[in-house]
Length: 460
Ligand code: ARG
Image 1 (cartoon, rainbow, N blue to C red):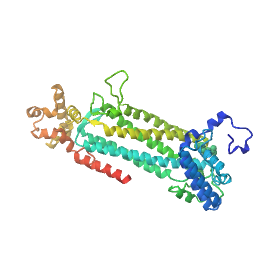
Image 2 (spheres, protein in one colour):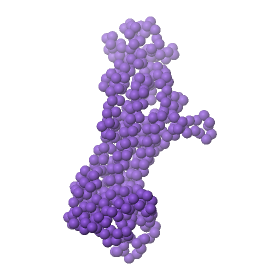
Image 3 (cartoon, helix red, strand yellow):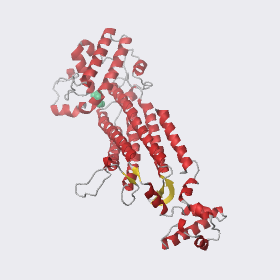
């Protein structure tokens, strides 16, 4: 196909070169943003008298028609086109002739593509935030249902101190709240219009950049025309935000995978979120969680791709930057899928509260509380710690646990023990005495649930 820019060329482009150069196979997903940007640009050109009001109207009407024709499939996207910007402009010119040829006045594809990707990411950030907020509400619900389900908390994957399943869930809620805040901040730096930067040195036409930004619902215009066409920081930021989201989902997935093993047996996944084995009839595999964990590497790869792609390119636009799209689209698509499926998986799993409690009883996770009890009786913490440690050793030797010892046995280790020790090492009490702000007690967990819920409401 003849190129719009072929006037200065004497040879037709080689087919392989054309394919190599083309981005239509992946940037056509921005057709709405491309058209929206062109409508705003044409409207401004008309209002400023740079093109006639009549031409401006013709362009806008035809662009709207092109958009609906692409949407309903009557206008198939030409895979031979160089990119979505050229495709739309070519169709426009075919349909309305000279008026169509006036659209690109005071504009370059460099500021056009910078605008399109910003508009596209703005839309996606909105959708990703909705998925994060949905996940947060599933977490809050699961926490509410399990705010008193005592379980062991771990360090080094060794049983450490008692918490509740609710408290555990709310730790993840905090991570996803920060993720959402990051997205919100990235959006602020994304929703800025670079249009008017031209190829790199802006334009001599009396354009109104602010008007275009307002028409597009953007919050401002970029300050420097060279930066306007060269900046992809906002895209890198989103790739980073998505990498952190994936890292959080991956840690959470790792817990799910461990918890549904027979060794832990803390939860049961809904059948719809597990798969069987082709050879072992007994198997129920946590594939969804594993895939989320696996796709995390892929999203990190996308971040590395765009960071590396940007690091050596001089100002201003260079074709390298066309490579930003496949990477960020891949990161977006995969993170969205993971957020959606992970939330449904969490929503449908069963918590085996009895097993959580059994596991909490078995690991001396109240040994710190036993020491704290002696501290309450006046013993310095380091001494109390030793007594409690010797008690644990005794229990291991005698295959019992701290809460099952009789008072005489306790007294062999310290005369300070009395009946009150049973209250002190009772697992529920161990949790519920931790009323410190941010702790695992029921009242603290209820407050945390309130914080998550009001965060969700404030964003909606
Ligand atoms: N397809 C190109 C991209 O995605 C559009 C910008 C082309 N600009 C240029 N000067 N060739 O980056």
